[in-house]
Length: 207
Image (tube, rainbow, N blue to C red; front, side):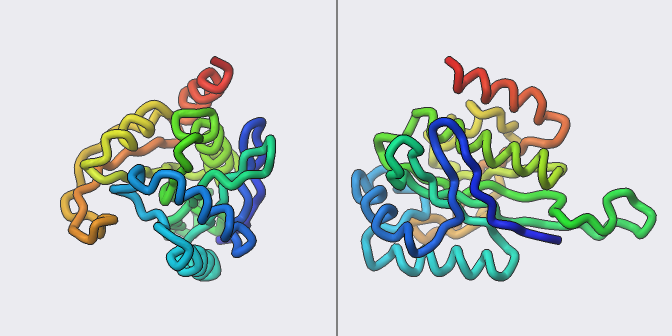
């Protein structure tokens, strides 16, 4: 399996491979309104940003994630971050057409957050379109998962707006941002959904 770190370019945002060069931008983006991130793993101050980036880069080196900084194209301002993670290649039998592929079979999109002024703008819609297009059309994955804290109604609504299908609740699924066992709402988009989801995201960006 090959995990590259592409630059994904849209009309409104650009997703760049996350690096320490984004340190000051992430600090500024997260500081605008920390109350937005009650249920999300967002670095709360300067001291938290370095380990946040270092952890993301360690995951990338281990082949476990592809993290991005979300950049506003108009002026180069850092709006937040997102990543592919829980990236898997399945053990296909030798004769199967997907055996020996260079790319993953399934993945998750998460660790997504935006500064206050970018929420409910084209930034999130286009970022998801860029990532999902890469996942389904370059990697040719079979499924993209998205999970969110069961208490995070804003995130649930955002996932539903982009076309995620609700699958159920995973109890005590992950450690929450407030360090309790988190119940997660699980959503997915599968390859068969992608043409309709893609059209919907393009229409949202045009409206």
